[in-house]
Length: 112
Length: 111
Image 1 (cartoon, rainbow over the protein chains, first blue to last red):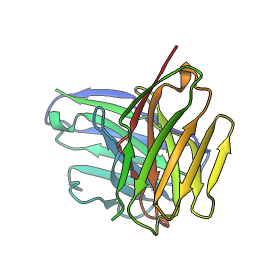
Image 2 (image 1 turned 90 degrees about the vertical axis):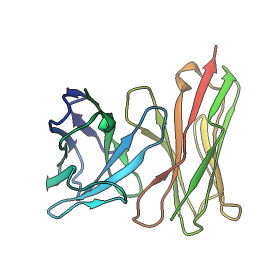
Image 3 (image 1 turned 180 degrees about the vertical axis):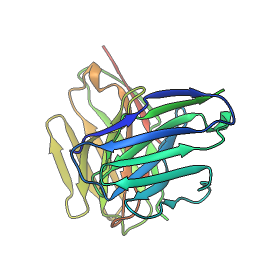
């Protein structure tokens, strides 16, 4: 399957600041990437679908102005959490593929 | 939209025994059903999947069965080992639409 990396693996930031998370598809040209959020002991919830060269598609209830997604190339998508607050603390995971989706290792965000 | 229910939420079995996790889905148009294993602090790993034109698929100690009529599918792990301990998620997808995940099952293998 596809190999996906994320950077950073862990990040701690102060409330009100912005954080950027990178998702790279190392061996698969991904026109579409997916961003998920996972709270402790819960399932994965799709936040948005990142489309190369065009705007992302956000799921209902996800603020597009707060979670900025950029998919500038076939191998890189970024998620920027703007004006982060403690309730944004979560595990953020990206994936590539359509039917068979392959996930990155995740990024643990802690907002203090 | 699609809704996936997964049971049980926790499962504890003795090493060497079998484990079964069950999922039901709501949308009869769903046609792809993957299973993911997630270890603590890591991203989910695809372990097996099945498409709607197949009733069963096996890969070594793991197998998945699908009953389209009843809209449920199951994961079977035989000869369980301590390294099988993890959280397992089922999911369903229709066409090129989004994956919808079940709530997860925390599987513990007792030595």
